Length: 286
Image (cartoon, rainbow, N blue to C red; front, side):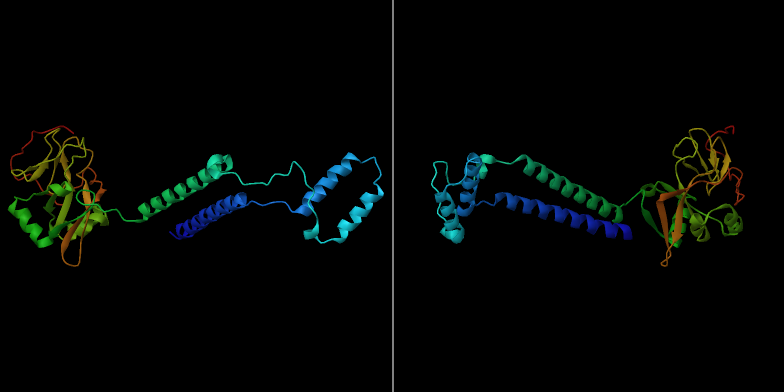
């Protein structure tokens, strides 16, 4: 975070410097002017001296040069010539965009676009995403109201917005739960609830409840789980996966559906719950 806060202003300052430099170069190229009479006279004398390099100067030329040397620059006469044509700057519309201008503008534009994209990416990374429904933290309601709903639904409360089952966790099994489960799910268990991902860990089928046996029983391949998602039979490689849960200061049950906790290993049975009646799905081999 600190590094990004330093790098972004540096990149922005570099882009500003490049824009100013490109603008200054354009101003310099647009400057126009005319040569002074003294400069033009020196150029002509230099050309003439090259033409008569092997000829000694005459007395008249020496005398004229001495007089010119004593005069001020503004008093120097301009030697008329047929080649003297007043210089006028070219029309920018006729010239259009030079190659150098095109390259400079392209580089500055590319740098500006790159810095803008980088800045947008940084802001998108730092800004917390707004997510609702599955993948977000869902406030399922108060613990007491959820327990009432679970009992009203014969032990199994289905919440489609979170793709989960909510069931009660017996208080007497907490000692074993603390040895078998991670802190991410213990917060909900200590409040008396568990939130189970309704997808079977075997091949991903949606696992329904079986009211008669009071277990979860997968119709695809016959995997069975007790009321808190621990595997009791079938080909599944582990128990049903959990969502991370917690209880806030207002007693509300919070389920983080973006954080899936892998189900308990085969053989875990903290509640010792046996089937309460007939199974809804036939027996399946391990």
